[in-house]
Length: 84
Image (cartoon, rainbow, N blue to C red; front, top):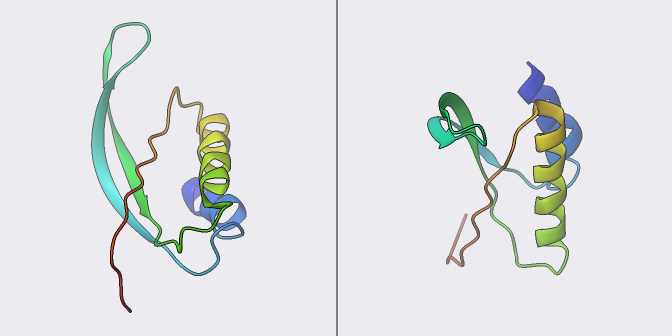
């Protein structure tokens, strides 16, 4: 429910044309040195390479770090040929 609210308030207003959310399992080394394993979410958004896209993605990642007390949030971008 908390993630859904996050998507509704932070992601959808910035990327209203749509997205896909996939459940995932991840792991990372915490700054304390401990290995942390936790469930995660992968959000896929197809963009038209607009000038503000990267800034909006960064804003979403920052909001997620703050809201869910995360050390980091990954963003991967790549060019693709997409048709709907």
